[in-house]
Length: 432
Ligand code: SDX
Image 1 (cartoon, rainbow, N blue to C red):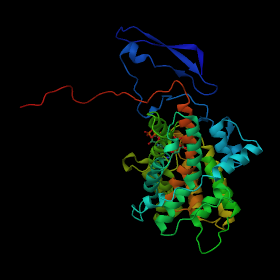
Image 2: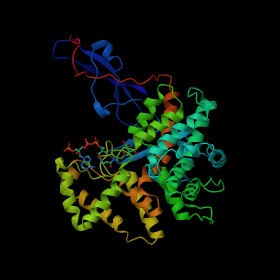
Image 3: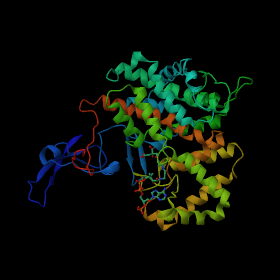
């Protein structure tokens, strides 16, 4: 970051001395006012619950232009990456800052493939769960448990430990997500087959059974790989900020990523794809397209607490570029499976059309986000609704790790420790 040819001056109406603060610029995007000395000079904190106007860090990984609806991974537009190489090439880019050449790509694929199995002891953790446990509860536990198996690489300050932990987490997440699914349906776990692609391996671990050969459908394989690319990273979203804050204490990468999994589970964040599909199902049960108007009235009634899931975004005030690519992927998968007339997909397109013409949504700049179509395409592939967020966590693991490693590699980083505006009881003594 570089000092801008600008300064911020904070003045107070009560006559307190004004304070000058430096302004810094990045390469693209808004400048920042450096308030690090504010408390020391004024005895006051800034106040920004939800961090709507707060930059928590400097980062060179992912950039979003919410007004343009633009998403760049290390400078490359998501539209290009969705059709260039595969998810592991995107992982390489996010982790190392450059796209791999042919040899680097081959070596990276081989390296990840050498770590796809989990310790045999991991399966015993699942036995403690009820069969109907939500897969995100299982996954949060399994990812945290990984830290018990890799004492040789839990020193986050050691670059080699960070490197091998990144590979282990990227390689093992598909295995763990598939194990959570198999446990829920009472089928035996499928070991990874390293002659398959990353997404092909996941499909086989999910839907393969010991009694017959599993043939990977190349259209579904490509669609899933693209879904992974679209979910790989997204600046300082809630779960990434959780991973950064958790990792800032120096805890091991597995524990920090487990914290990210737990945060992503929430319906306002990664849980929105599951909530969106349930919402579309509910509208379908109400009577389908003819009832969309009635549903929209509920959404617009603040007292209903009903939100249009899969719509709106803290940063995008234009169409989420991922939603467009997800809709295309949806079209491809439904056509491949002969489901072009899938009622939920037709309903979703009608909901989107109506919302984009309704002033409530237009005036609030609410557009479809990545979660609006991802549930429909995952359901068509055969992924159960309660596993959608697990797939999101699988794909986002590389982003979490890249952001965590960037933070730990920044000499300026400190343990995160926000302050507060205290509105509770002043000091008082216990009576009697
Ligand atoms: C993800 O941060 C990321 O990058 C996240 C993510 C990633 O890749 O990591 O992109 C993934 O989490 C996508 C978002 C998935 N969530 C949903 O689809 C849930 C539904 N969306 C909303 O909950 C909401 O839009 C948020 C949480 C996504 C964003 O909320 P904000 O930025 O805090 O916006 P807001 O709540 O202040 O909304 C502004 C207005 C409010 O109305 P008014 O007070 O102005 O009258 O818009 C309304 C809100 O009530 N609004 C909605 C709405 N989203 C916002 N009204 C109806 N339906 C919605 N979905």
